[in-house]
Image (cartoon, rainbow, N blue to C red; front, side, top):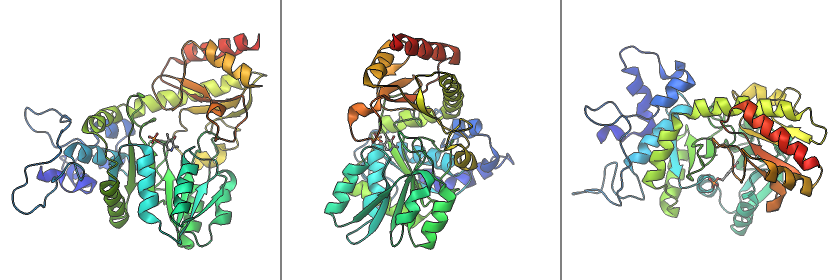
Length: 397
Ligand SMILES: *Cc1c(COP(=O)(O)O)cnc(C)c1O
């Protein structure tokens, strides 16, 4: 297991030895994804070794070495962490820490970096659990400021903050902020920057390349893409920042199960295929919805003419699987959802099966009653669009 000890740092070197093959940086996304995090081939062993189920490891003598106790490290996590690191920053030394969920990953950054007297800037239109986080942070004496994602409005409350938290595109409104610009200003003001990259995934945008200190995601969504597990991760270039996050995982014990970590690694191989299909379908759906009179407030960052399009095009390589729009009222939205045959009425997004929901049913998001968040899957676009248009017409009657 000694080849596992150095985490993602070993990856660039490993690939450099591949008989003069291309540098990891130059590989296409598909090639990188199918090979990401795999150990060097061992005769008669599988390419991706199975999940390691261990609460503790043989540990004679001094308790040092890569694997001591199951809450601290696990070889299945190590491989997944390398794989995610290769997608987040191809060919570069970064460290990734995987968690039991996206919220565990977010909490690890926030609680490892902030203490009483610090100020943090959050988006006011981000993931719906951020207000819960705010409540906790304020109870610990952290000052929490919020501003919208669009128009880089978080800049206006940055002064003296220790951490700037971005979510772009934000969920569910799909506004986008200019990460490079916000990072430049934040760093000049002495603040660290974390980006919640859940919606885009590292194949949609690479926050570290845009200058962020932390790339954070819920891998429950598009990263793993089958709607069958919860997981999260944090990636950083800075070993000290990563160590703080890793330490928080040990303290809070927010660790992923080995089976989930293994399934996630297996799923990463198809991320480019799934995402390319979903993005193409999402654009086609958005274009079809443009022609409907009952649809207002249509948003997709990849749709030319969308308010997010210009900034998104400057920092994203794929625009994601989520389309949002507004139907005239709650009843119409519910009839539409009930009339869909190929789309499940369910929350979450980024899965191979399309899902949609009336977002207002949760409370918490500032959205109209008829607001639909639509996550586009890997179906054939003709089938999907026909189903949506038919359900829209049926809901109008
Ligand atoms: C779902 C989501 C989270 C939370 O992730 P979990 O895996 O459910 O804990 C955080 N941020 C965004 C943008 C999300 O969509």
